[in-house]
Image 1 (cartoon, rainbow over the protein chains, first blue to last red):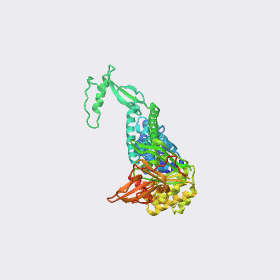
Image 2 (image 1 turned 30 degrees about the vertical axis):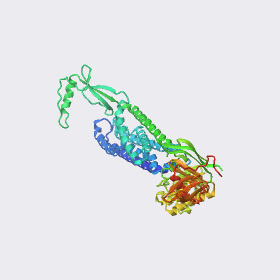
Image 3 (image 1 turned 90 degrees about the horizontal axis):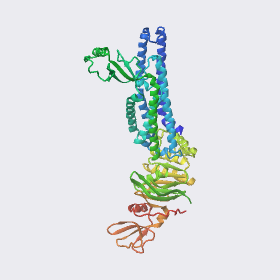
Length: 320
Length: 281
């Protein structure tokens, strides 16, 4: 059965492996080039927070952005592709071509046929996701030591840790289940793409509630000094200690800014701080990275198990 | 002789409609059984239940030993080579006679390195039948094996199947809605109509047991078991089971297989079923 699984799905396996290899080479090349640049141009103590390091930091930032733009689409598109090309055809194509009547009338029982395919392909998908995560995690520190964005940026968050593996597995299970629902490949693929996009949108909304947000009060500024956080909400705190969304009787006039300028808003905020107002921010700090990673992975894995169970149930109940 | 396939009180329901109801039959081992009936009669449902692709809603299907199945349209993996199809069979079966299969395909001039999708319809049918035979089944179930084949390919496919039944004890159940395809090769007849069994029995015995009578309108039909009747203004044609009436105006002759089948299909009320225990040697 393992040979059968390999023979039927080798195109997907090889294309995915080739893609990961290509990405690995790109990341490796970019990391080597960046390290060389730092070794040749950076003054002692750089990269780091010193002012002298600014030029190096800008150059590294440009390199980072160039490479990131090549694969920044991956958190959304890669699971969609995995679901569409690994999951949807697994059962959809068999039903569509009628070959399930060939495969499931051999001596191998249907449950074993399905178990081997789900295990081998599911395992490969998880391994692929972890490999992607490992490569990105090794590559990023070359550019971003000390400046994190793996938590605050949802895109990066979903490319590191266990998130890619969980997303790929979820999409694979979604595609497999869609294949049993439609019994055709193309509609199943469409459902996967829509389903992955909807799930990502939903989880981004829901992720604010993975933990109770931390609260901090700022005075003199409305921006947290740590850029790698997830903002949940914010409010003004009156001198009396009451939180309000919009200060109404503060006595500070707010004028509308024109164009890119934020001059009037800045003046209004400075006025409020001058009158004893403070700015409360609800946020998740970067220290919650693994809590969020495992929560998201847990949700996706449970969903994948439910979808896989649905596919197994539908297949075994009426295989014809 | 033991039964290779035994169906008892079988009913299969798709949501609210019954595709099969109250089906009971028994095919003795070593027979080549023809399953005939109009489209939608339940032939495919019966076969799918026999090979485990469908679950019986009520009743039971019992196959003695291993069954192999060739589904309608002979599904194969188009992007596999013929050799890879044989490996597929090897990897998914306990019993496998790959050498005989390769030899048979070589004898038919089907190259092992060719992609299945690049073969002609007749060659694909041969590959599908060869795969089914290579698992050394006790019961071979073929759903419309001759549909969409040209006359030469029909003949070749039937010859492949018949050669195997001659060599060892193999029971074959094959369906068709073209009775003339089956006349020379089958020795057991099952007629399904509207999801119910009408006929199940040895073909020679069935033909011996029935008569086609032609006579003028008004000839006596008293005492006869009329299966079905066709009337014109002046003439009556009957298919009867058992002895004819003594009225001398009837001209009697033995029916052909097609006449027998058509006679029953015209009148779904008629049945010719042996008692369930009546699996005769």
